[in-house]
Image (cartoon, rainbow, N blue to C red):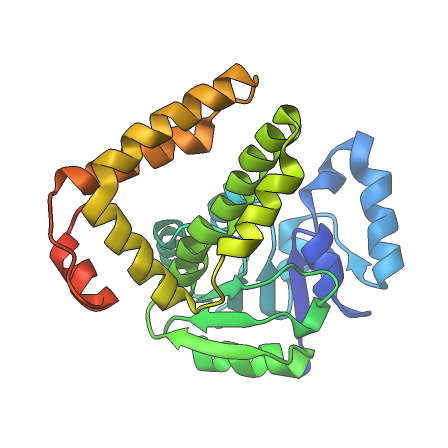
Length: 282
């Protein structure tokens, strides 16, 4: 391919994915206070640092958008003024499907080809071996470009923009939620001086099982005992408060347990049946 690969945003992900000779623009170079550090990042990666979005987009056949989440849509809107017809816009930012659909409208209206890309693991140390999900009308073309760039784990997740993002965002409910729950639990256990006992108890009771089976069991317990468990968790929140730990995650647990219990549903056999019975409950 004769034309260039461009990076919009050159933080950790951009530096992990770029190859020598690629082009990059980061708005940190617009600020005199951060310009030198970002230019040093360009040199370290062996990429050509550009001064403006228009410069980095010139002659680009594929653009990796790797900005902060709040800048994903503004970056697409800015690029729309300069993007060439047919250029692939690979939106790799961790944003909601709706945000990606809005960015897609902007890029497609300008003649570009928008692709929803979800990065499904930390970019370091994996770099080009991180698993990627791609979605949208141009997913197949994007998969070819990504593979040619050196990515080794690229999967087409769907034909619609938002299909890849939905998987990543909803998965994050569990991944990031468990991180936050772990922090809340560990802080309280440490302050109460019972961390070893708490972790040993968790080790003893945590069954090795797949996530479908785990969620099926969890929903069963919540549907049958949500009200009782909400009352118990009120006392858990009081315990954390006594220890000086904000029970932020626990308060959410109380609300969810109570809402499930108030439905007074008889748990059905199997995860699919439970989800059907719950319907639009949120």
